Amino acid sequence: MAISSLSSLLPRTLIQAMAPAAGTRYPSHLRLFFPSKPHRHPLKTLFPSTSGSPLLPAISAIHFEDLVEKDWSFLDADPADSDRARRADRAIAAAEVGEKSRVLACLPTAGFVDRLVETAPCELVLANHESLLVLAEIKERHDAVRCWQGGVEAVPERFSPLDAVFICYLPAMSVTVNELLGMLARRCSPGARVVISCEEGREGVERVHRQQHPDMVTSDLPNKQSLEKAAADNSFQMSEFIDEPSFYLAVLKFCR
Image 1 (cartoon, rainbow, N blue to C red):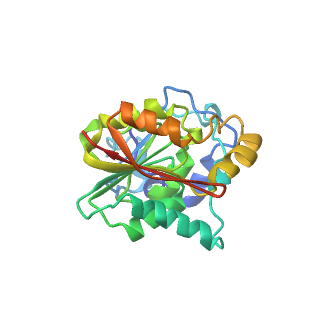
Image 2: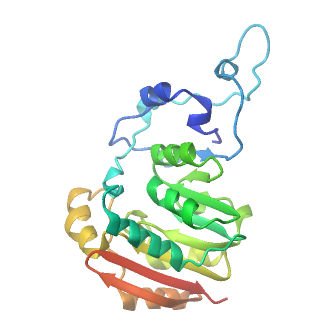
Image 3: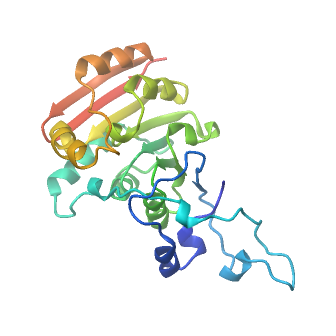
């Protein structure tokens, strides 16, 4: 189901009133897409009237009591944490994004997209996430960023080939690293870089996130040996690997 950005259609107060409670789960068949084209229609055009046809196409009713939104705020960085901001910048720099690059950010925070847009100007930025509210926040800040709810498979193939892919939080993506690289191998341009990073490192994932959010954080970060094998099986080559308690970074180059 395709809809416009919540922030471009509805007042902020109405968005907040409609927002589902934390802990709500979306049905697996529901996937929402936020196109970048802004809507300039007044709010009244969203609803049919007896005086004429609405300017926007009718959409199926959404029952918000059936939508359940999980709370992803545990991934948000403290604005005062300058060290974490530097780690995010290091991950972005590792992708070697150019002005003509097509970039995908998987499971990013809105803060990460802020840094990406500000520090790595490129032709196209795409983002996918399981959270509708995170995507709405990204879309509100950066209307040019195209957003989809779901995994990598939710992003239409017409936006391929990709020149850089940021895997911002692999432990919550519900796929193995081999499955993920297999999907990306079909979407990447020759020489593309896949950057797997975690600004809080393995220690943050294993000792904090998996303990506090076991329903969302379902795996650990891959070690070097398993990542190298998965990379080789899918035509990627590891060019950098850092596995520190407070920072994880793996850079893979597509060699096909």
